[in-house]
Image 1: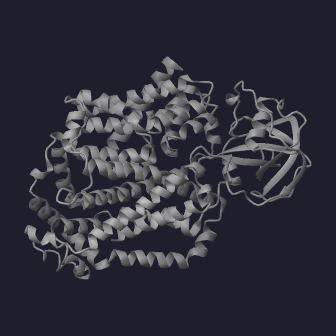
Image 2: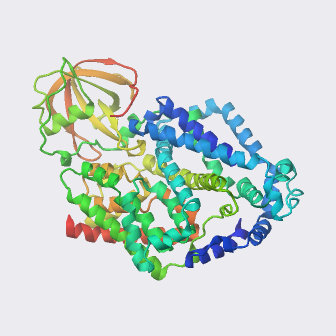
Image 3: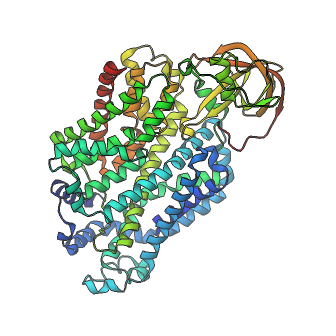
Length: 360
Length: 264
């Protein structure tokens, strides 16, 4: 796989820098490169036979069912499994929705559409893309494959990333949930929307100044251009489900672990310190990886903390959390995630604090 | 191939959980139609790609690439390989190894749902988190009268809100009946708890309710009980988030089976 990365990244960066028609790439060249890159792995996979592994794993687990159930009956492990499974189950509709939308973008929306829909200048495309996040009623799991698909289709990465950050935080469902969770503090809704929008735009502009296109390495997706539309659609969908879903599993496991091993009591001691409490809740948002539609209710229950600290929780959570970092590493590459996540975290905390001082 | 199998398996596991009541242990009831639709779509996507992979690509032979490129390296799949070339061939090897390792991870939640079927959040989770009713939610709100009947059947959440924020005025001297599970309270005595969900079990928070009067004793944690009782102004504090936990003056109680939807 390592051998294939330079090829992939170079083709990605060209696509990202200058929107171009994919038909211009000679398919034969792509195929030859691909063939060379993957030969050793391919031979290995050929010997092992993945369907056989699949069957063997299943058989083994059916036999191990009872010991496994006994092992997982300890309360902490049972709670871990419950939280892990429920994060996955809850994410499935959003993931499938996001993946299908990204497959539609990949197959049915012509590249020229994005050139017309977004302002030509990237610095102007960023706020437009952030505001467009309002229309995507979902949580963050769906936004990652959509942003990946937008970049593939020639949308400037800065705008796609601004959309990625804004969509889960400022859509109507999330804002209504926030209003319901904070009945006494309607200003929380405004603060959340403003702060999230500002963070998304700042990150988009920051990417324009500092970002390097070769940090983004979209995984090689089967070349869709030679396929009929139906086939291209379904293979894009399957590719994204497996990729985004697989990394979502890693994130869900991490979130379940935090949920079980970090008792809320630890937080109590931090609540009275203004600076630490903001950092503690921002960090907790990263670790807990709660869906953006539910995080307002959790924030409301953390009543020992200041409103500003809880605003930081609500702004950071939909933009940086373990499952998102894992999914971003899978879809955009590790070099990207390693820079993007800490930068977003810093900007989000800073913007939340400033917004909190002004509005709350 | 295996990728499609994993996807079908995962889709089937979610589908099975959502057509039975199993999904209620993990998510809200309202998500059900979306779960069913999404899991069917997962299965359809996997079946469609399998179908495209396995059917003979008669038209693909014309575009000039050499069908024998892979045949030697990949003996076991040769029957399939020899008929799929060019773009379809690329599709195939992409699927057979490049993302294989990530694809396997989707087996874990599927196995969790099918083999382990973890229980709903209970006493352990309730002990980890502070009670969900906080003084901040005390908004001036005229509580509607309790439902008709004696005793009036209501939820732990409803009783606790009325007891804390309405000082029991809308309860008056009526008898109420609540269902929850047993968990250790701040002082070690058993209390009644019920988890509330906003979205999924990851955000589950407990509503805690102390029991005075004829309270059940010697019940194991996580035992579901239905208690009947009246309002009392006694409160205690949750040691985790320092919020008030109201009490109910229990007249009678009985052990019950876990409700279909374990959350409120």
